[in-house]
Length: 364
View 1 (cartoon, rainbow, N blue to C red):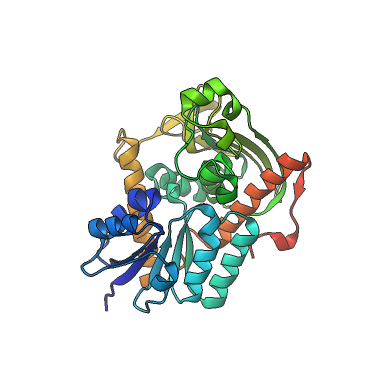
View 2 (cartoon, rainbow, N blue to C red):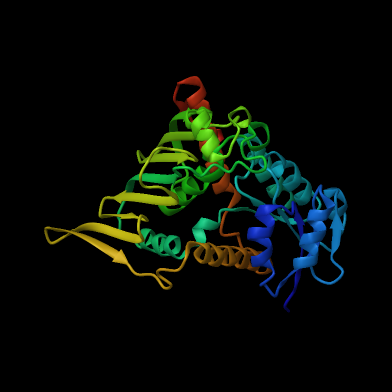
């Protein structure tokens, strides 16, 4: 028997309006029934545009969670609220999709996972770049063994001048960090997922506050250096238990020619792959080196449409996982490891020392 899930949205700002709501509104088995935001006008506007007839509007998330008819909650707030709201929703008997990153700290992320296990409710994190056509195709290539043992990778999330000066992105207290936790998290998640490797052994990291504090650059970029309390760039080297190495690069402002977010380079024992200028596979055959461009359906489609299609697939699979009682595509155990590595990069950058992982600090 088919069922329609009733959804509640907590946080009706940009990430909800530009990502979650348009995609969810296209799913016939999901009904957008409740909207919550500290600014009532934002919640009402979202309800007017996307809500089902008679949808409720709240400014207190506890009132939304008290509604027994709500099956699923999407948490679309600043990072400092991810854990509190997700945990409250899980304990209220709701399935939860929380926007990336999983939480502001690894400890908060671990608590989210523990509560999900205790309650038996599904929890997933909004890593939508896994659902792009090139990501899905490369995932298949990795799983069929074409690249062999992947022992070196690069996770790219670099902008030349792409500082999000709006909202709370520059606020370390609310976000937990800058480009590393904002866009680096996407690149790292994608890389670990493609490698199917979630066992880090050691991390070395660096972080910089360089271009963000240059008055001339700040004026042209439209931000106030005194309010830029997060890093403008962060980099990490992650060594996995099996010896594989991942280089992570993230920046909102960097003097570099080639920029790109949520792109991956993979090097395996049989071949390599990268996402620069399309999806490419490279290797050696019969003594000759080759480079193969993988042609995807919809090649040449504008990035905005690629992103929209990926998000629609992400939301569809999430709703289907609840209705079919399957594990979500993005498992919270995987997202926790991403948060642990990001935190280790920040710790290493601050202390100047490598961070080593113990058995109890990894996904269970």
